[in-house]
Length: 252
Image (tube, rainbow, N blue to C red):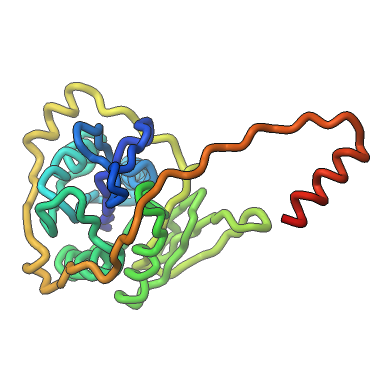
């Protein structure tokens, strides 16, 4: 069985994001970029399935700008077998919307015929949490979201998922789309020898036009602003004063 793992190039999660002075978006100048953390977990899980003998090949795909090659090389260094880069924009500030990404991924799936697609549950830059679900609808495949545990059982995937009430375990028919959560695993670090080997692994480059997908944005960002600073706390002298303060806050 083949596993397809979409990965996205985002601002590194350790970097403090800066908003442009004109409020038109986020400043990406000289900012460290890396693989979306949820996608990194998906790559790790795919590699573990291969190491367990349940998967023959791990293919990673990224949709965006040419610079996403670095992200794909990171996945290859972790242990993925080959990569596909779909160049859909030349502007690093242009974020490809989930529906366009899902349509392109459908084209990749039609070519690659994987039995399983492992996605991060969301990207940390736009927090859309929509691509996996849209892809499932376009493909007509089953889906399991927010996975914290995954096992392959013959023609089925057994997924433990995190829900508001706790944990829920479901069995879905393959092929399927699984979106992964933080507690699924801890991604490995790529060793220097594997980083060198990754440079020789195949990386195919395609374009959105190859899949007949229009990536023109349907949403317009009107304004971007930083969140308001946290207000200072208040020290109260008694329970009665605490209750009174809570009532004031509730009234506001």
